[in-house]
Amino acid sequence: MQSRRRVWASLIGVLWAAAQLGCGGDPAVPDAATPMEMDARVEGDAFTVPPDAHVVLHECEGLATACSSLDVASCSTVMGCTVTSCRGFAVSCARLLTMTECEAQDGCSWSGSCAGTPRDCATLTETECSSQAGCVMGSRGCSGMATACETLDHTRCLAQPGCMPPPDAGRDAGPPDAAPMPCEPGATPIRVRVLDPSDAPMSGAAVRAAGASCGLGFEETTGSDGVVTFMVDPALGPWSITAARVGYAAISVVDVLGFDFAGDVRLDPITTFSDESYPVSGTLSPVHATSTYVVDTYDFETVTGARESWSSLQYVESPPSPLRFVALELDGAGRALDVAVTPETTRPRAPVTDVALSFGGATPREHAVHVRLPSTGPLSAVTPAYFQPQHVLPTGSYAVVGSVVVSSSTPSEIVFAVRDFDAFPMNFLYTSSMAPTFQLNVFRSGPNADATITIGALTSLELVGASLDGAVVTAAATGWGYVGLHIGETDSQAPRWRVFGVLAADGAPTSIVVPELPSAVTETDLGIDPVTSVLPIAIDTESEPPWMLQTANQGVMGYRATAAGTYVTIETHAR
Image (cartoon, rainbow, N blue to C red; front, side, top):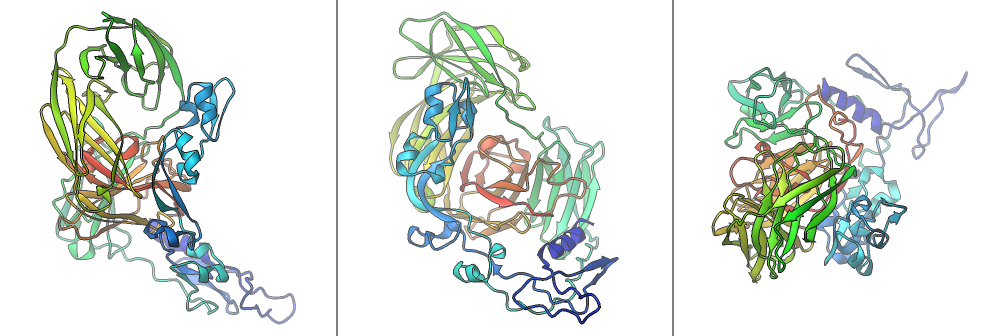
């Protein structure tokens, strides 16, 4: 079983070599400070250590103080932490289409096209930050990943806050802890239905139910109705549910008996992003002499200031999104006057020419979107970074079809004057940088009239753990519904595994632990690397819980408001 394999793998990973018998002589007496070889064997359920072996498990243990919890003065005292005021995600080299842009991006070089790896924002000085596309200056703070205790020797262990030598260092190791007991069936049902991206039942998905007080849990595979039902004992909980299938991003929901679990989870194909691009060109008609034009579609180099003709690049990810072009006519103040839309087509892996966009005299409508911010907590320090309207078509393709102008801004509220069109209800996306470690994304579907989005107070959001094996995210908030992790996500890659829990309504701290995948699906199957990125998030959704909503990269699509901590890189380890 998976949990048992994990016990042995973990044990073997920390054992160091002990005494080896000399040929024809007395057993060698090992120096207590010097690792030696040891012949340890697993025979069935028995763990065997040679009688003369002297075993030390490790020189350092504990949990190193997280960089995000440190002030600037203390940051340099923790190995792995650095003081920085540069935030954000550097634009990838391949997305820079001119030599000037490419050579201005630290880490990129031009040779007919832009290639290389841009330097991370957190490593840049104030001067370097201002010239690195995608990076912005914020308040000085502590970032990085504190060096894990178990990787330190005795001397460095004493210097790392949160770490200490184990009290039993140097003593002989006994047999390992007993293997976890299987979960006994109970009388409380947990019904899970797994759906595909079209919300149809998914067969062949592996589903695992695990209780905190028993190790092996239950596993079943969905049939044609996509449904599995587990009979559990609540006393062995809290219980977590994980659904996975090769080729799809996994979903975990923790503590499903602690709230009203909806029972459905949605698995979306793992989206892979590449720099594969193809030229696109077209015409605009009619064209007014005093107007400017914007042409856009999802995953496309937006055209601005276009006149009679335009050209750009469209990108292809896997699975590919549909292709539908939208053009806006804008007045001198950037307000939308008219809209033109092409029919939706399959996104080709080939050049696209002669895309005709004709304006038909659509009448814009106007309304205001108020974003109300909390008066206390990390989210009160708001610096607007950028905002843009987006439209999500029913099939899932995205295009700009509205315009937004900031009409007023106060420390507690930002008001956007919005113009869009009756035939094309838009989604409202607002992103603001947060000092010192948070970023706020507001995503609102179709505000067809005046709307108010109230942002709850987020007191804390932190991920602790050097590996997925035991990683814990903790958040304290009011007005937020969920806390979660996007595992394997980067600024150019959608999450491979999403883990969710429900936040306490009274603002008390809520913690969730990364569960295990079903044995039929491994982290490698999901494309999660041995060293992976993890994004802790606090989420407020418009309607359905987050495990029922499709998400793209950046952790915003489908969530009404998302506060995201900085990306954290951790090791997956053997699980």
